Length: 87
Image (cartoon, rainbow, N blue to C red; front, top):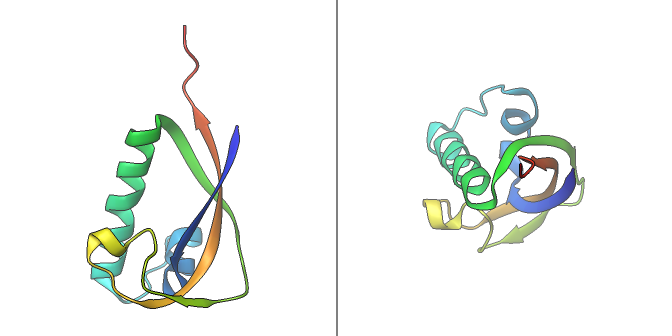
């Protein structure tokens, strides 16, 4: 297991932690695409969100920037990640 921390939009917290809609379908879709890409790119078999910072920062560049989500307040999202064992 590894611990990975990512900078993501603040308004995503409830969706990322509990699966509850944040009311912004574009943001939720961007997060889902990012999560899928991150897992495939890094070879993760799981990513479990375990903590979210409580100190927002306004940032232009964050993990969802390349998915069309612009400048916004962000938080640090901490995940426990696991990779498939090599046989």
